[in-house]
Length: 552
Image (cartoon, rainbow, N blue to C red; front, top):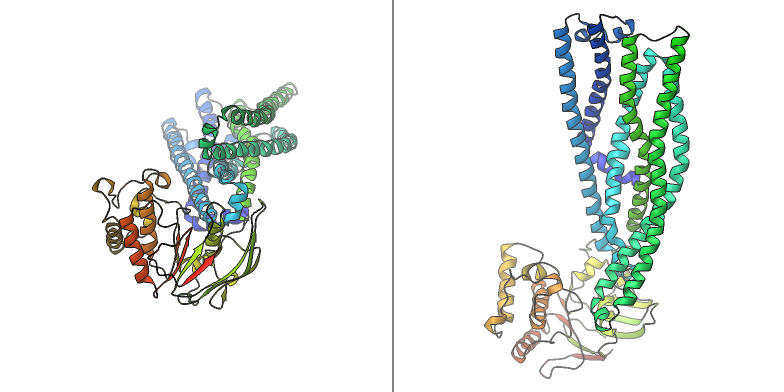
């Protein structure tokens, strides 16, 4: 994945819009050059002068006509057409920018969903939040201003220089020399800008990540009165950002100050040149001089935009580099291997060893028989059960050892294939969605909704009326609006609705009253022999039918 590959893919998908934008840009550029020439013709009408150089547009009879009314109609038509073409061009380029940003953020989000879990655990979620704000905005500017508008500006500068060259080659050479000197000087300024911008963005990204991590631990900060040290650490990071920000603003000020300076210097050199020609009796005709002045005025605004585009390029390249780094991160495989069946097979952990940099170290071996209920006893709080489930779902990869489902090694099975066969009842996997239904299902079919309602009603048959929840009940972020028992019921609904052949129950009876626990135990006992059931808990429920028992 490269910057230009992303851009080429987008252009191929939007060829019509791209070509129309370029054509409207070319049209209004040509009309922009016609306006000062038309004003020169008006000068001839008003002062009864003639200039053989204004015969440049003999192909436009309304400009060279001796009838002022015809000329005036032509002039009004030019400015009206220019308005229409400029409106269409700006609108289309804006639409291209919005579409490109939409395409990128959707690709980025889809990719981030697939990034392997250890990456997030190592770097934290906050590291990637900025990609949706400042970086995408810079990339959008890169495409609209740094590519489309810059291309149009270069074409317009070329047209204006050709017209000016027709009137005066000397002035054209002065302008070309100024452009060359400007780009050389700005090249070195932009090297400094790139380095400072990169440092500034890294500081901002780090600060955002710190805020995200801090707010996730807000309860600990409040409970232990850590307001002052937390704010102090933030202030130190903020101070570093300020120092880099001052350097950045200094370079930006230098570039933005240099651009008008060099343009006004160019005007001064042109004026000196014209004055010298006059004194040597080689002056330019008044009507032609008016056209040249108007063309230079048109040129100045465009010239400034072209000189400033380096800033857009530098910032855009930084953002592209950061975004592409995310695309290079390891991701899970989401292809579904339909030719592999793991519904009625044993699950084997052979000398599996899992370690982390934080010091966690666990080794174990066990074999879970198909279509039986297996109980795995674990000690609370040591994380063993969570690691086991994540290894089973291929969220984690073992440091060494072998995992098998039947004869299929986990290493050759995609994550999607494995998870299609396993459902989990565990609070370790937060509820996601706005409503109860969104939290337990991702299909909006009427049949699925009826089934979801039936399961929810079944699990709430023993609940007091005041605690009853419905499919459209708002659950809040990660179910914050629900009680612990309501959350647990929704977690059960989510697992039962999928009806997968392997069911994993992790502390699944917590927060539930005795009536619903007994009902669920009866349900599990009935599922025995039709599903592979793994129960991870601290102790066995007396009425559960257990075929295998392990200590983890």
